[in-house]
Amino acid sequence: MSERALSAARDARAAPSGEPAPRQGVDLGPLPDLVGYTLRRAQIAFFRSFARGFADLDIRPTQLGMLTLVEANPGIKQSDLAAALGIQRANIVPLIDGLAARGLLVRAKASADRRSHALRLTPAGRTLLAELKRREAALEGRVAAAIGNADRRRLVKLLAAVEEACREPEPDPD
Amino acid sequence: MSERALSAARDARAAPSGEPAPRQGVDLGPLPDLVGYTLRRAQIAFFRSFARGFADLDIRPTQLGMLTLVEANPGIKQSDLAAALGIQRANIVPLIDGLAARGLLVRAKASADRRSHALRLTPAGRTLLAELKRREAALEGRVAAAIGNADRRRLVKLLAAVEEACREPEPDPD
DNA sequence: TATTGTTATACTCTATAACTATA
DNA sequence: TATAGTTATAGAGTATAACAATA
Image (cartoon, rainbow over all chains, first blue to last red; front, side, top):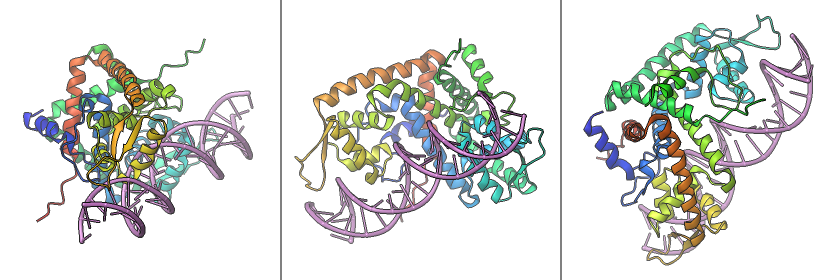
């Protein structure tokens, strides 16, 4: 990471990216040194950046995740897709409805288990996903330009380790 | 960061921390290598960890941020508090109502500008905040135990740089 | 005119319970 | 009996518009 990027980030503590106008002179106290605070701030900023970059396509991060997983796992069940993304299976129904209504994926019926739906991308879904991946790569590139690609990869690994460390302890069934 | 923590994080890719039961055999494709994905996963896991650790006190991350900033900036205006935390000034009203109803802070009226409210912690607010800080330190310690404190600090700096890199470009007023 | 706090409203995300059809 | 999909609903969080009091 460049010293410039670090110092810019440091100086910007009191100037949040939120819609309310930035303020000066507010002492953030211990917050800027906490993972809990910086994690939230970075996520909000990144997702706003995502929203700006994908506004014309009307695609949200979760929808990109859904399309990516259906491509990587053709025929995946709704409940497995939901579990892999950390979404309740009840909440993924309208999300799939929306993508299906736009002709991006289909609920196929060819399955041994007639309770489940096999999800597959349509050609339109594959075409859109290719463009989505280009734009996502541009976002990642923006991060890489700020901190360097080596630190970008390091950041990804640290974040995965944080997720693992924060995982809820299993109920431990006897 | 220890190799053990890294490899645990890697192996856990298909076992998300979300409430839906973890699944095996789902290919996450390129997602685990993206800042956008790991950032979201880490944030969700961290905040669930926060919720577990603070459930008995009925305190959420935003409320901890509010109390921390009021302590660091006694007499701060509602709108400045909102801006510093990236909250709309309309949305912070019921949040302050809640903390005031619990006797943790007060809307003082001693101000030159009679439109604004000067926020201050009550003794009860200061007492609770001390306990909140102890618990937050424990959460940070959990992260530090997983990746080492040097990498924890490095992570904080990387996240601040990511926030800065993703900041919305100013409208550039001529 | 502009700002502060406020109300109202709407939209998204998330969580839970319960139903149906299948297994 | 258990599971997959679905519906309904409730709770947060977030965004915008508009208003009264004050500057």
